[in-house]
Length: 264
Image 1 (cartoon, rainbow, N blue to C red):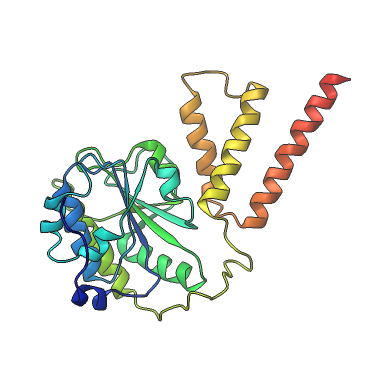
Image 2 (tube, one colour):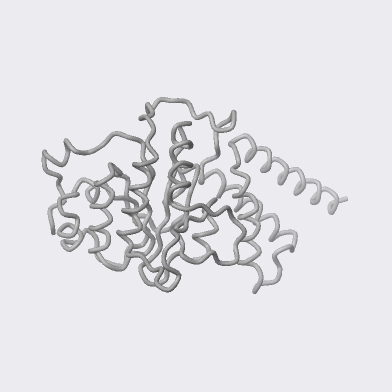
C-alpha cells in the first residue's frame, strides 16, 4: 500500500486557518482526488472529505498526482453518505453548471468566497460540494446545500475539470482575504448560533416522518421531489439552533394534537 505519511516539510507547510471543507462526491479517478489535494494545499485548505469514492482508497495515483500534498490525502475522511459528510457544517455551497429546477440563492465563486469568509469569521463552518466528473451532483445532494455556486464560463464549453473547480474556489477564498479567526471564538451568526447540518437534517427527517403518518407524502412518484422542495424552503432560511428547536416543537405539538383528537 502506498505511503501517505507527510514529510517534515509538508507538515510545516500545513495551515491552521479555519478554511472551508472540500467534499467530493463519488469521484471516479484517483488522479482527480490527488490533483484536488494539490489545489487545496496551494491555498491552505486541508479538510478533504470523500463520499463513496469510486476508486480504491488510498491509491498510489492520487499520491502521485498530488505533487507532494500528502498531508491533505493523509487526513482525508471517507463517508458513506453526503448527509454524514456535511453534518457539522453551518453553510454549504454546491457547485453546478446547471441551475436545475430548484429555487435557491445562486452566487458566483467570488461572492461565495466572501460569504464563506464572513460566515467563518462568526465561528461557523462552511463547505463546498463537488460532484462526480461525468454527471455532477445528484438532486438529493444539491438539496442539502443552501446556495448554488456557478462559474460564468463559455456557454459553448462550460465543463471544468474537478481539480480546476477546486483551484478556482481556493483562489477566490484566498483573494477574499480576512484575518484568521481563533478556534475558540464564539459563533455569533445573526445574534444566535447557526444550526449545524446534523441538526437541520434531524429536523427534516422528523418532519417527513410525521408527514408520512399524516398521508401528506402518500403519492410515491411525487414523494422525492416534494421532500426536496420542502427542504429547500427551510434551507433558504439559514436556521439557527433555536429556530430548529422551535420548529421541532411545533411538529411535536401538531402531531400530539392530531393523535389526541383521533383518540377522542
